[in-house]
Length: 379
Image (cartoon, rainbow, N blue to C red):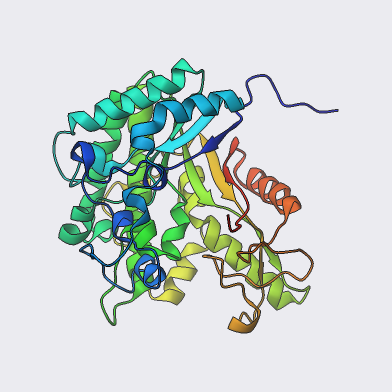
């Protein structure tokens, strides 16, 4: 019987925006997630359809308190150790180090907090796996620069990344640049801080922002290896393969197209260049990517491993309409009649995880890291 190798990393995951709370303590600035309310307006804000540049007194914002990890991390990490964790995935809140995002020097209180957090992990023999940006762009960068639609974000992010690699050298070996980078196509404000003006080509905005993130990610990977050759940097995908709804060629083609759209970002980060088919897709969507000299060379700084989340598989057909899709999924999917669904409408498909992993390893030939896995349910 096959067994997991010695040193295999078992653990769990949180993100700063989901756990820390203390949204204005220690010099931290506001981020995109701090503007996303619970309730009726939540989805419109996440999608970038409703601008939220100011908090409202009559709304509840989950990130402001979260689970108070900022004050309770030592006892929480002790509980993780008791559970047998050997790895703990978390993230650094960009605005805790750079409150507005464009400062030249970091906030010392933010550095001190994360050093203490990572030292606590090491004390319990838990390896930190750290995401640099987990759905929390500093709001100042959104209001003043337009977030990732602006090329200057590459400069701001790489300064922040270098700060992290240098400040936490020896404490953190495993890094992720952007959480679920492909979600910017489906939830633009929460994914990348994007809001849209009436009448503009949203696909143009999203894919130009994607180019900026991909360049920034490649530069961060290069910097991480310069700071310490032992650093391991990964990309991160909202995973889950698409099944064709039937064996009709049109359905099989749509599943292929949906998988390609989902894997576009990882193709660039793991292979070091835009896939050939992207030119056709950009043309069909009316997208023209503005590149600077040297961008293509920069993208060749590929990741060391491919990480992903998996919650459900998906189905696609040439006829995807509101009557047969699951509204619970951020990534639009048909309901699969062959599997059960959770209360949230997510398909329960453990074999789909194996299929996803085989597909991604065959495609990239790099180590895989499953960094989120769970089941949507009401608690």
